[in-house]
Image (cartoon, rainbow, N blue to C red):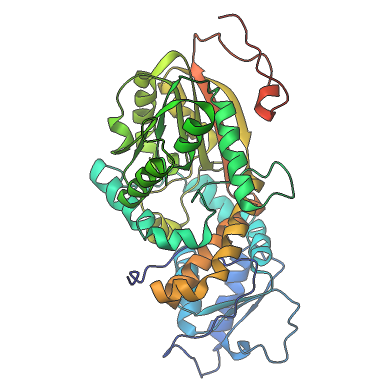
Length: 432
């Protein structure tokens, strides 16, 4: 299956891949004074990061210090589409082979992001343009189309570079020596402890991916799970896994939207779905939680977020995750306030996600020949950019990863301390 030629985020990471021109893109004429002026203004708009910027007359790397981190525009088109539409233009040009990044790519782009975050343009954008609405497109029909565009690229593709359980959310490296698979298992257990799972509970999961969390909850905590997801390929894989593990009696995977969740549950969990809900639907999600969570229930929402409300990166929004939005913590509170919930705990796992993405990228690079055969070189560059760039965004602090634990307001059956979250002791509860 060939991928549609659809770009992705804008920053590769970690392994310094060598990118070349696509056929027909080479530029033989010398840059004009206007080209050099545009490059200088772009660097200023970026906040003057500690990175060199070069044009195509130096794009072959000759007589250049290879130890200096550098972003090189290899074509006139790549330069001007980036200057005119920085987010979208950089990503599109990189994916097309018109931009090369020399050096450790995650580090180069982390430095660039940190500088850009303090630039006058970014401050203006953050304070005066955050109110400009993006078309999130998260109706029932649009949500299915948006999710299919990313998650239904093919299970064989994701299987190449995710962990064996195919978990596509932030891992939890509770020990520095953990590998990706161990950290993902630790994340599943961390979520279960926060949700206060006990044998016999009924749990609902909104957005279940390939089913790893639902299966872990049933297998290791003795709960009954109903898991909702609108990605057909993910649901089919999850059902197959449930049958293979002999857990079909304990886990029901339902191909349906979170808005159609029914029933009453002791716990509500959602890991990596809020980004696809859109702020216009936060109160709708809150209403779902209110009607389905029992008075003594507990819930957890795990989501990529930001420190301040800000428009989505245009390239991510248009090319990678259509309909997506990464909320600030204050925006996330609309979900819980509208549901009449009390927030019990907030944890930020930002640096855990930076490492998760770096590990994904490393594994992705090991399978580039297979991915190229499945799709094409454009797709490979786009996903290299997306995975590495997101790692850089978390490392620079542009993106956050929030886990919020909540409960109905009048519930007093709550743990006295946080010790049980880290396996230090069995939970002790206040009297209900």
